[in-house]
Amino acid sequence: MKSVVQILVESLVNLGVSHAFGIPGKSIAPLVLEFGNQDIEFILGRHESGSGFAAGGYALTNNNLGVVVATSGPGGTNLVTAAAHAKMNCLPVLFITGHQSAAEMGIPQCQDSSQFGIDLAEIMKPVTLFSTMVTRADTFPAILTYALREALTGRKGPVHLCIPFDVMISPVSEPHIHLPSRGTDFMATNLTEVVQRLKSARKPVILAGKGVVLSGAQEALAGFAERFQLPIVTTPGGKGSTHSSHPLYDGPLGLGGHRRAMDLLESGVDLLLVMGSRLSDTALAGLDRSHYPQQIIQFDITPEFMGGIVPAEFMPVLGDLRTTLEEILRLHPQEEPIPVHTATPAPYHDPLPILEFLSVAEVCQAVSDIIPENTTIFADDGAHGYHAVRWLDLKPGVKFFFDSYFASMANAIGMSIGAKFADRERNVICLTGDGCLFMLGSEISTCVAEQLPVIFIVINNGQLDMALKGMQQFTGRTDGTIFKQPLDVAAYAASMGANSAKCSTIDEFKQALKQALALNQPYVIDVIVDKEEIPSSLAREMKLD
Image 1 (tube, rainbow, N blue to C red):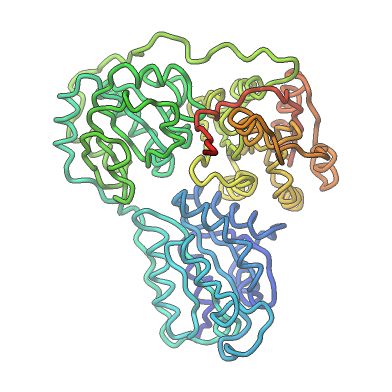
Image 2 (cartoon, rainbow, N blue to C red):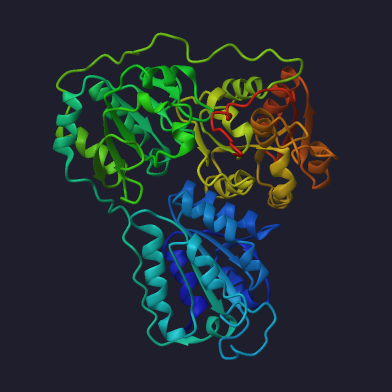
């Protein structure tokens, strides 16, 4: 008979999982050893949170399950933020934690994760789609089947299994696992009404959110926009839904947004087609209620955040976005080619800011020009992320991911690592900041140990810029936002064995980025930028009364 860990790892292999991430310990040792027995490469992280983000980046890039493991107690609690990030970004990640012994529950145990200690299964419930402790080996096949189905179907997301040591090594007499079917995305059924409303609208516009990126619907979105000649604007998280040079693209809206997109929304839009967006405050920041559209057609895979956000006549379209758009195009083919034109001839960008020192805007424009098309960029949370939303131009073939919703600092560091393991052929760039690097910068050591050629562009201004500028504008104070001892990023990277360069001019940065791309090794670029640059993230007000 096979043991629980043998069945678990065999199931992961059958799903096509090739890597798992985490930090081992006694309670999880049988699983880590079984990874080696069945040729799943275990990637030793430097912090459980970083490993959890890496599993998310792996899941996003592979469109498959990511796996992260941690020992009991603090190992498990260190995964909570990564699990929440995966839930809010619909990333299918299996979080596995250990526990000393199910047979001895109720007596004091080191790092107790049961209901007699910290109850890790309960802690993880709010930040996952499913969380439980497996207390009997004979129930494991059914529990794993359910967990995988929750993670990989419908609105995807993380699940958590806490498996005690003695259960892991216990045999299972009937080890059959029902793996979820792949490629069975469902589509909406009210597509005829969508097209009728669209054709009746006077000035319809597409608002593309992160759901376009998550569902891989970029090509279908472009086809839909071209078929019906619809201008596209993107939310901060929807950056990457279309390439920046598409003639129907009017730029980003909300935090990090551009005036051109705002002008379009303020010009009398009567129908807004919301695709894969929850219409959060970051998506609608700066848009006055007087300019809200009369009608909204909202495309999403589940109904939790459909309707009620914007006071307008509302129509839900429930289904997988890519599948739904492809079906609309099949039902309404283009009888003859329609010339794609841009509705707004104005240039996409304003002039770059004029500052005494290097600006993040200049850095983003240089990245846009230099990187090849087979590149994925992960932008971390902070002012630099919103600068990227505004100033980064995406060539066709360049992928971009930015979490403006849960907005966990340092998530992009781990996600970049996981993404590179998932696809060795694409260049991977992490655009992060000194504040993020203080949190999880030690994960660069993982890249060095594995000789993983991720390029880390670190925006360094010695402060938590987004928090500082927001507090400064709305309160006149900057308490707790300036690092009294700034980080020497280049020296920090070098101490971990990474190639590094320090830049304070745009020419130095361009040279370093070209060198990093050519070298194909872990590389950290320390970019010293102007402290006075105004981020594109001040549209949300902070009121203290």
